[in-house]
Image 1 (cartoon, rainbow, N blue to C red):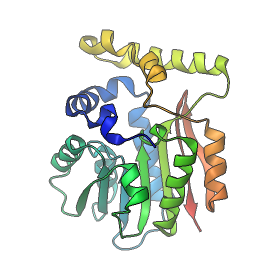
Image 2: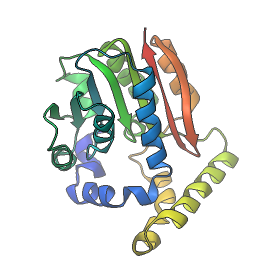
Image 3: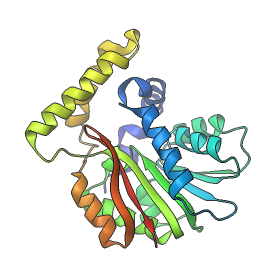
Length: 239
């Protein structure tokens, strides 16, 4: 597993830039948020209070959107970047039930600083930094930390199964940036798809092996719930 401290995400200036411009280069971001809210409302079997865990929480946007659906949520946010956690704390300042944990995926798998179980675990645009074996180890970790009836939801980039599809998906992404990014940012953001492809920190895998890993580990209701090019939402529940 690559060391978080050696990745770009440990650089506070990079983390800040990502937050400032994310809406311009993450296709369907707002739609993905709405679907995540729907998963929570319709598929999560709640305990009181409902405990949620966000792995690679970034600036806390996903948790904030879930709190808009249910403000009784007890939220734990985990990220390896102190800069991201600081931003998450500021975003969620008006909510009382939040716990910020500075830990990388490596820390979770080797030290396990989390002692709770959770009703809903999510991860958005973070797991693609892990190899397939590391992804499976994290999936197993999540399964062990889920309550019965709990749900695991992943939003991430996935590797295209063929070269032709990859070219098309990256073209779709380029077109999204061209039509949605602010004019002041557009010139620099149009190169993001190629930078993503060439970035050694990124090790995306095809969707199918990840779905199979979830099923192998005992998750139920495993499926891809939404997909736009290389961006996919998938997951499963614990019996």
